[in-house]
Image 1 (cartoon, rainbow, N blue to C red):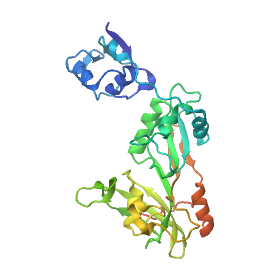
Image 2: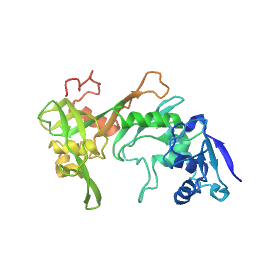
Image 3: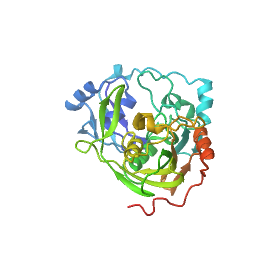
Image 4: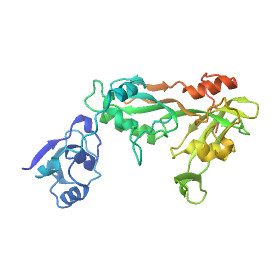
Length: 324
């Protein structure tokens, strides 16, 4: 039986193929393309392509595809232990946005050999919403700090635009081994994924790399051995801050992947964990009501290092004001 479904208000700007994936999860992409190509699927009476962005109120003609309505394999239920764990990470929650303080060592999503990850726990963060939160950006497994989630589709679209554009300001704190030559600076080095032993790694690649820009400011220093540095990535390349810090010959403390043996101090009192923390984020709120700013406290291993080195945990006014 042919059906005509109306695009709802929370499906604003969703792609047509994603709309079908949501409503008919068993429908393969190849079969959907054939339905589109033959004109069996129409939007407001017209032929459409998979990438069409829908708007509320539009009518989608759906041909008989009842066998495609078979639900996808259900996610494993979140254990009580993991549910309690992930709820403790919440540092901000409103009708549109949920923010957590991701601990170092917790992957955001699953992968080869990864069975416990944040994405697998998101059902425990539904609270009073009608759907599970949506990931709109990422943090490395070993990076701690602010991670923003959208609580509905409209918020996800709005937040996604903020992260793709320049309206989201993400500030990271790190401890670097050695002190950058300049107190403030701009790193503009293109990055590329290169094959490496044990998997891929990012590297500076002047020929084929994608442009990557990071602003930095030295906030404090402990002689010439260690510095507290704030980083503000202007682009979002994988491991960008870590590669750029290493390129300054001041690798992030604990970052053996990019700094090698030089990324560690001899002191047994200092943790060998990565000292990189997403300290704060500020961006336009999806509701249109002002700016959302959230700050995440330092993780335990960085607090211990801060204490040992005599660093403060204060947020400076704007360390990037004089950086071009």
